[in-house]
Structures are given as C-alpha cells and as structure tokens.
Amino acid sequence: MKNTEALRDYDAAEFLDNDELITSYLSDVLIDGNEMEIKIALSNVARAKSMTDLANKMGIKRDELFNLFFEEETLEFSRVQKFLNAIGVSLNAIPNMKFSAKP
Image 1 (cartoon, rainbow, N blue to C red):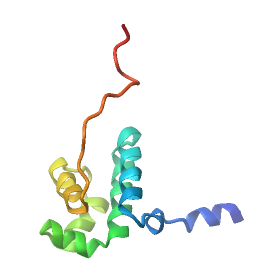
Image 2: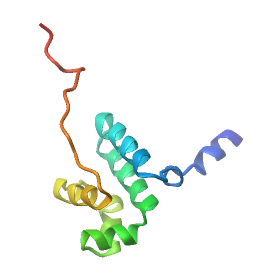
Image 3: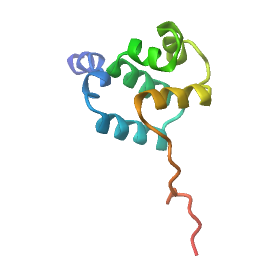
C-alpha cells in the first residue's frame, strides 16, 4: 500500500519547469493520447505555467480556463489552439510512420 500512496502524490506539473520539456510532454501525449489524457496534460501544463497568467494571455477568466479542463465534456479545438498559442506552442503535421502506406 505504501507504493500506491507515493503514486497519488505525484504531480506532473511540478516537473514541467521549462518550455522544451513542456513541448516534448505535449508532443508525446498528442501522438497517442485520448481526449481525457490530452485534457490532463493540458491542465498539467496550465498549472505549471500559472493558470491565472495563461487565462490573461487568452483573454478569458481563470474560471473559464479551469472549466476547459475540468468541467467541459469535450475540448473545443479553437480553445485548445488558443491555449497552445498562449504557451508558445504550435501544432505541426508530421508523417505517421505507423500508418504510412507500404510500397
């Protein structure tokens, strides 16, 4: 039971302390993550960066940013894109070797 307790105390936001690490973390989650995993990753980044500062950069209230991750059922792409712009990250399309056609 002790090992389980240690896992509950883990907070990914505590380790996201630079832009390179945040970008790598988000890239990994966006490649294979489902919607819930993406919401969790974005909320971890928001907490690491300061939800209040990000909400101000996005031109919304802190509560609205909180709701984006914890209250809304689905993520709106336009709001995710606005969030990514606020943290200085852009989405780029790259070929997925897993699904590329074989000659």
